[in-house]
Length: 183
Image (cartoon, rainbow, N blue to C red; front, side):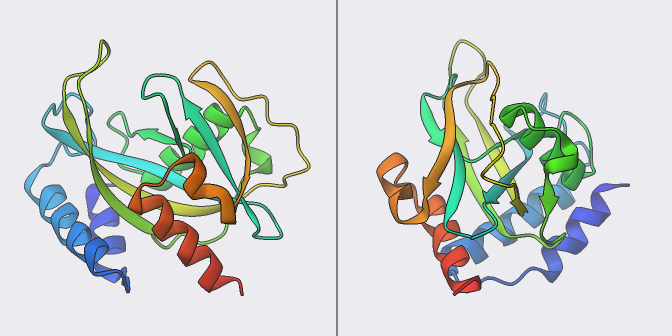
């Protein structure tokens, strides 16, 4: 698989959020202009993948308190050179949740959300941009979620409470999309 797959997914993706539509255009331009867009060593920015994980009832999402960034986020991470962004997302969900891949259900291979955000300098990384492509995943909320050492805490959060954990616009947007899709 090559970056062309992700380019095609983004070309076919439509959003009703104007701010996100701009990020889709900028992400496409970035990918088209950087053959190594999946490589985290491309220090000014790179493609990352994450998942909006919902429970079967579509009332909760899985959030983790990220150890390095000290904030609540959805599972996800660096592609580390892998252009198969769907596999990257599933791998990251499994690693960060501690749940076996067999319990992770991709609800659609269509893009669910796109976000561009800055990762500020830390002891681990220089300042850089994530061109984050997100997919919708389901996990049974009755399963134990052991997590891993990348987060301080992980758990299910009611959609109505997401903004209390993280009030970033992108989490608001994914919450709204979930509410609109599954009413």
